[in-house]
Image 1: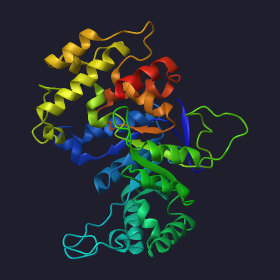
Image 2 (image 1 turned 90 degrees about the vertical axis):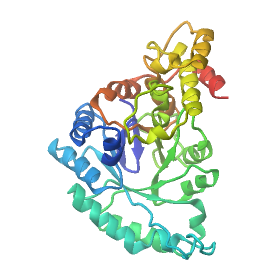
Image 3 (image 1 turned 120 degrees about the vertical axis):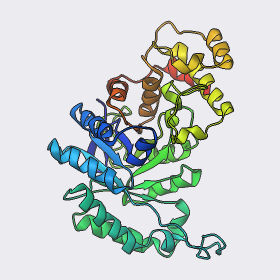
Image 4 (image 1 turned 180 degrees about the vertical axis):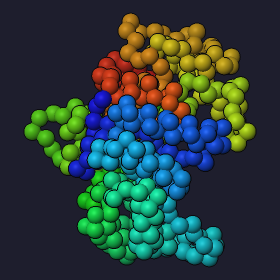
Amino acid sequence: MRQQRIGEQTVTCVGCGDVRLATAAARNVDAREVERAVQAALELGITLIEAADEEAAERLCGDAVRALRLRDRVVVACRVPELAPRPGAPGGPGGPKRDVLPERLPAAYVQQRIEASLRATRLEVLPLAQLPLRAAWRASSAWPELAGACARLVREGKVLAWGALCAGDADDAELAAEPWLAALSIPYSLCERGAEAVLAGAISARAPSPAPVPAGSPDAGAGGKAILARRPLAGGALAGTLGPGARLALHDDRRALDEAALERIAVFAAKLAPLVEREPPAARSCDAARAVLERGRRPPHVEAITAAELALRFVIDRGAVALPRFHRAEHLPEAIAAAAAAPLSPALLSRLAELTA
């Protein structure tokens, strides 16, 4: 599998993203099934696991790494959630618009959360801790204190590297200039590309190499910022199974999608169908998608087996680490295939650019 660097650590270019038991339960996936998926991913060689900001998820990830004796090889990424604004507080409901960093991420609170994650994972050190950050906060009077607290936690051996969880706004590219941040996490996929400026900023911050370094190689990103791509399958839209008539659990968060949104997802699946070996089921889930499918033009050579594999390879080829959510072990083969595959051809990338224009 291709590799990427996060600071001094090397990880596979596909990881287990957002291990979140609450979401799994809402989608009728048992915690034991999530545990099996995480363990299977580790056994297949995936070396990055991102735990959600919930104690049960952190415990599950830590237990899996320790059970397989992979503490020295696997990066467990934990999250520090920002505090909710209080009514009347700066930046809160009814509050004045001014510096909110001391309210949302006070240094003492960050320390407490790191200690809690260490207890939950039962790891000696957190390989990667992620903070929800905004570029505008760099001007805050509390920014030096936050950065100093993070540096101290590294010196104390509690955190190896820090990352920023970004919304993906263009201004977030400025976070690439922060030397204490090793990674920037952004929402990014074939059909969700609003964070291009952040991706470009992180790539430009990478140390120059005397020779060209292929995207996704072990030396890509050395000395610079790794990009972690959240939602590389656009919340399941690029997996090829989501469309009108899809059966979803009663509390599945995707039930909020209306028929128009599901139709748009199905139409995009139909556009991708000629580019993969296995036709996405959603490509025939409605009349609009079937009409697009009938007009599809198949290239002489098909480079991917499934739509999910194609979508993940696109993200990897952009120099990012793709973090799809694995609730079931059956989803792993597509990710492993994407991580091991050669870069997509220029002709296919051009075709994909046409589809997303």
